[in-house]
Image (cartoon, rainbow, N blue to C red; front, side, top):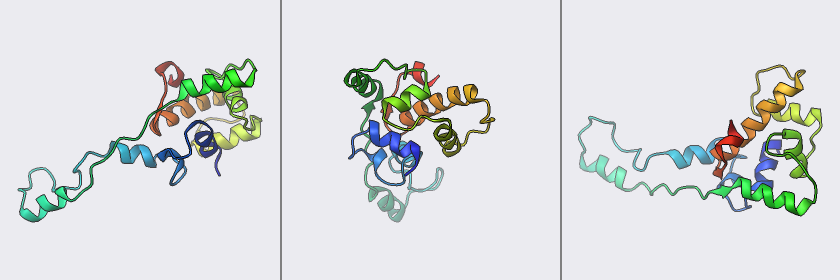
Length: 150
């Protein structure tokens, strides 16, 4: 299991769509953003009984349930008894989730999330990782405040 999938499993309920399927970096979010009836005839094509029936037979797209990531993390921190700066630190976020926060683990996470910078500059990588993890959590059905994504 990838590190990001493990992060999803720690924050999202086990029955959440982000925890089912491919591990969740884009699958559930992409499915949730598809327009209802998007499989109908292209624009400008007159509707015929067969194209209208095809569009009508598509099941409606149900929105993905939202998880308040900030509330979950606050509750986890209250339960841990530790003072961790998870709002800005990827190391502290990983510690809060009970995951390996070593440089090797962070480099692996950076690789999973397609970091293109130098992994020898751990400060820049860490800042990017934190923002990227928060953004990916939001893409997978998490309610994440803007200040945690930017």
